[in-house]
Length: 514
Image (cartoon, rainbow, N blue to C red):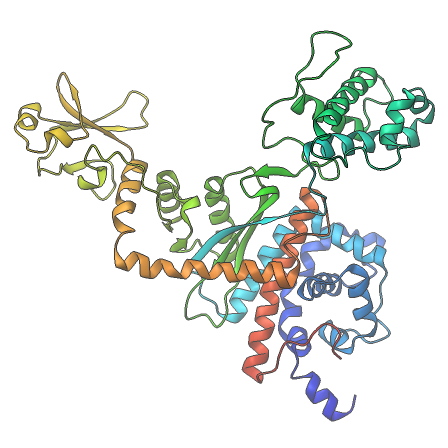
């Protein structure tokens, strides 16, 4: 390149990637996959992982990414390869992606690379925010009729391919409905759908009964899906040849949603998966990065994700944050107590109000610092003693009943009358919830908690710029890997953009720019 063009290249994202991002990738993490006796990998791990990252930064297909590697001078400079070296095939890219997938679905690569990025950029991680987003794998959303028809069709197509003689022995009208049909059996008007669903349920029952004990057919993966659909959706009939199969009114949220992706579940946001994202939100950071990403079923509650996310932030950042801002979906007394006791993190999550207005709230009682003893009641009276319930899960504060009888608050007191006094039953989680309900009404909490909403912009950026709304892959292992690569690409992109702006305010060049 001439000096002018080289100067422009050195002010671009490519030079910053070459200088700062490329060294973040630890090739030694993949050394165990290559036997020294068999030689080195045919391509640099660092280069191939970088191709996967740049692919997600610019939301490209494999073919488009490999074309950029072959012809784009900016990519070649970023990856530190000569034009002669800048070539690889689809198979090699696929093999290296499988190496990353085998590495805990890309979790270790994400955590190590992000940890190095945080250290290199000098980012603060004491304050973070957490949110989830719904994602969909590369499947078609099916009605119940569509689910039955697609699952049966997938099985019959596999049966015709692997065991054509057995397939030809099935009733001709059944084969015509799913294989040799004109049109699509599940493409029915609303008035016709119930009748066709009844027929599909009968066909499903017939196939499961016919091949259930067959040595060659029963082990087939497609038959396993067929049997799973039958077990989850149908009520077994009493007779051998029923005229109608009764369907389960409300199948489980973990039931089969698509034969194309058996790992998909159903939640309140719809069919698919949920991705948990924890992100730094310190106002002194020049940019924010995602420190934890976890993929789970759409039917799993956010309540269950606080602990694994905090554990991942500890691995990525070296320690858990002092504050973790979340929405009400993560808020519970158990999570507030767990976050503080196990990780030293104050979980800033609002708590919904469902307390009875008939009695005084638990928050009107004064507790000690450890929240395991009552110091005094709303009337200012201290309990006589404390004791633990038989299960050991709760505490009892015992008050003098003679004092309680004269108390002006006795009609709204939440204590229970016992033989040896009045007792208040509570747990640490109960106290945490009561105190949070009081705290979240203060102006200080509301002002400090405003920063949580900033993660919505990250969710939007991942969806619009990096294709995380609907992925190109299926199955939880591939979905998890794809999400982690996209989030890692987001972190690297923000780092590159920051470095470019510090050097000179130049826009991050598109993938096709030279």
